[in-house]
Image (tube, rainbow, N blue to C red):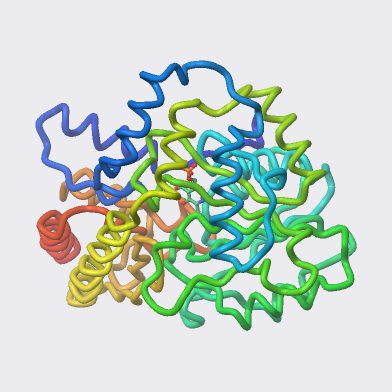
Length: 382
Ligand code: PLP
């Protein structure tokens, strides 16, 4: 268990809640979830399902209706031919990380992953006894992927490459050219898998989402991770999925049988409604994120000691805070304890996050403005 990491967002949230209990006012910019309510039609579908008797186990890999809806959705959005047997439904997208690494990566293997990046990648790589090989995402490259470096880091022991676009925590987007370079660099290697975390694929501000699966031979090597948490404001429902070749899907379903048995039945039917019902609500949420981005980025750039790039996707900013004279963790603690702003140190996302903070702008414009004022004051005082 010593090798298992964690996600500090949940720890900072707990600390912030404890301060609120003592009467402190905290603006929450730490947790990665939309502040919107789940759209009404999706909630109604779950209520209908419960009242119609969908209160029992389902197949481990997911209900046929949802596997079909996901297969159609991924086929349409990624321009692929995906069959329902290639879909495994899980309680959130996160279990797909857990299961695919458990299923494919052995002790001693090497896994390339983005750093700064979602902390569970490194945690899980370490947990199975494999070697984490960080690919640094640099501000000067707009937090894109350094494919030359990535190519150099591929060895005989490489078993998996993890991609995440749009990226948490930087808001970086991996370009089509960069994805092609990754695909080309493993063209002759059928022993390397790609875990493509596309959970933010619908929250993108410029251009359109690109998946590595579009390149020849990549569909069979890739596990697409996606879900409902971010797109449909459904974090608490726990609903996500992986798309992968059939033989792997069967093994991942077996891991589901051994752990969760299945995903909640009424939640799955809510997922069918989310994918097949009207899309106006997620579109409205995206517009709102875009509006907030226009507030938070200039606001941060106006604070002395802080510079901030415009994120291309997701709902995070990753400002450079080196000009404040504080390291990431010191600033995180200072903001929480003395300024009433909950944010995350860049180092919560790996060693290359030093010098940065992650702020989520899944909060109202009013609260974002309040947080900006507080940060400006706190940084000046220090
Ligand atoms: N992948 C990334 C990059 C994330 O940021 C998150 C959640 O924060 C997830 C996956 C998992 O989301 P969920 O398990 O709620 O579907």
